[in-house]
Length: 109
Image 1: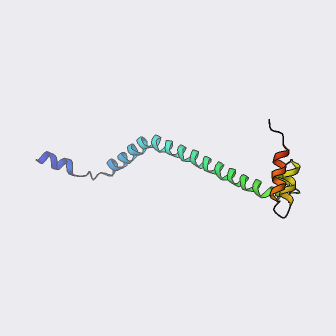
Image 2: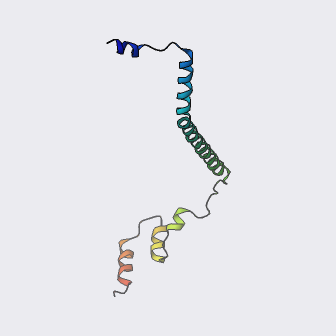
């Protein structure tokens, strides 16, 4: 039992603690250096991302504003068929006889 008591006491010598501190620093140095290298890589990547986002915003702001189109939507939707164009551009509904006459005038294949 007396052996274990001896191990449970902390040494009081300042040289012991200084040596222990140097050993821990020497062993942890490569691990901490690798961590700092990873942090530098992360900082560079973050800086690159911020620069890319700033460039994207600058490009969006530098684009000219879109002008008004000369072609209206209705003009773009009017078909090439003259009868359909006439029906779509008329303000009133066509009589049924005109519609039936247009179907009977077309040749059947």
